[in-house]
Length: 433
Ligand SMILES: *Cc1c(COP(=O)(O)O)cnc(C)c1O
Image (cartoon, rainbow, N blue to C red; front, side):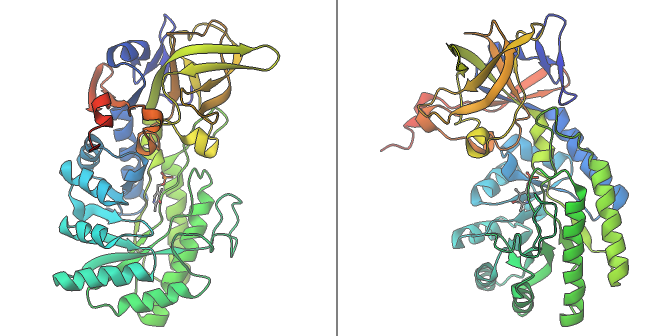
């Protein structure tokens, strides 16, 4: 199994977090998002333990809430002592409603509106991460109006392409995100920000990509960022307190993906940071990272009920489910791989190759192509899609007027509870006037 929270019972039912998925499908209906609360906590603790082991107690991981955002999740993050990163007034509002202490929040995005900035300050967001000079100006203006000094990080682009695993000088300089070091714009934005009377520049941020397994990518990004920090110290007499190296650590979607090791990844990164700081003769800044996917992805599973099975002899087989791209858009968006099962038939051999497709009027409404399923798969079977805790609920839409499913939390091997109610038909006309 791709994660240790997935097992099979003697009677051939798929178990998730120790609970029978066929019974859960019956109890809560389908489609349903399941989230393994114990796994989420385990991941938070793994990051926290690694950070305090290899860095120091100032270095806390920040959960990137864009991966999945609802009140209960922010309560768990607060209980686990995590910081968070937020990207919109919507995420801030959800965290506020959960009672999360926003002084531990970092506000990202490449285009914060004036109302986002005001909303963030109303709620005491600790840090604004400015993507570009426009944002620095807009934050300065609002902070001045309020007579406060706002803490800030600057998002820089170190020029790394994580997918070639090469430090390509120009590779990511053309990104929508961040201010490029290579073009000299990073130096300019630092100079400009240091001159602003209502901004306290705390340091720098970068985020090089997602689903990265090679910790070298983070080490190289750290190297480039630390060189820039040393450059700023020499050029402006400014020493950054904080360096936030972003998120992007990979998770295991299919058997061929490696088994991620948080402790090892943080350990190697810390070694790289220390040696770069020694070489550059600077103090080690407070290090942050912002894991999103790797905190929640394998804590998630989506359950569906199969309907139509269409066999086109000599061509292709389709198994249709009662959800699709509105609840799980990652295949449609990126062709992402997933592991899928017929959850009530785990003891049967898988001899039928089929595409699992949704119920939308759209050929691209695919969950996964070429999945091996039992030959008997058909109507009323429970179909499980694994590793769906990140970027599923968070990216859900109501396309074809399909309601967004409930999120059900599992814990302690036998407890389950609804954290987000499923939408109803009434929700579709709530805002219609
Ligand atoms: C998306 C994102 C993250 C989280 O990425 P994951 O791949 O989910 O870990 C962290 N920081 C920033 C700035 C991001 O845009």
